[in-house]
Image (cartoon, rainbow, N blue to C red; front, side, top):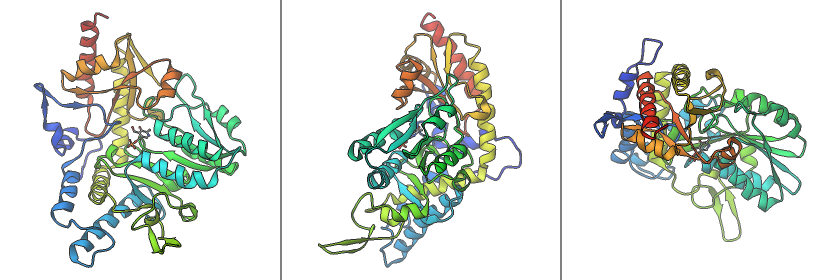
Length: 416
Ligand code: PLP
């Protein structure tokens, strides 16, 4: 575990030592991981928290009458409390553990959406959404007779807020919007959007997959009704995620999945349901993963989220400057470092992004190539795919320099 830090800037070399995978060498090179928007690496403390859950107190939660089961329950519920504090949620019972953002959004779609939407209603999303904030709404729209409306983006990769105002009519029952785009990096004005949605009586869901790991998220200040995040993108284990929901709304919602844990009484005639959050956690949950996510929150808080944000902002500014040295590159999304997260998507002339990623891999550099689960956005950008680099607290300017040099070599290699 890292020691508390006395300086303002992040001691990246020391942070890297906490991440076993970053000690690996790839084909003779230091591993340079520039794909944290897909999934983040995990520090030793998170790996150990998960291992300890299996090694020391592996038991099912909420039902054991013996010590290790009580310990497992305390650790699992302790993680819920940490996450509530991390998001400034008013109450741990408004935190539901899910497998990730996708499951959190589906939970809202199938529980809230199915029970609230009717023909003629609209679900307002944006052109920069990830598929996981598009497809669940399409599925639920088909079942309920509601329809989807889409806020377009401007050429600079920010949301067209005038269009949002036009589209936000009384027909809109839900506004589902990403906090940070996983392609453009744009940080959306969530507080303002939630306020506007409230004025027409719409419920709000924020996809926080790319925001919670990097920004100081305060769900109370944002004023959203739901906030979804993925634990694995914020140093936590895969299979961990969270849905925050406003308590009154969660209490009024029907269950999502049925089974053990989520019930109070069951007869063949009728079942009554448990209180929130348990009503939404049917079956044995991902116990060790949730505990690991709690350890991830501890780690992020020990480093300091403001400092992580400042570091990533500086790194993004530096990366944008370095990448602009290469005239063949087209960078998608023009929000300034202040208004964007640590994500940069680009193409290098007509070199296929997959070829670029494979070329960089030979230097131990991991980048993402593809449509980033945002095909409608790719269509808007008029591309089939892009390359993407994304940063976290363990990246530094050296990583960017090595990546820039490798990109220049790639252009030479491919004869551009
Ligand atoms: N939303 C955004 C903006 C994302 O970037 C991602 C993952 O890349 C998701 C949702 C889906 O997250 P998960 O696959 O963890 O459910």
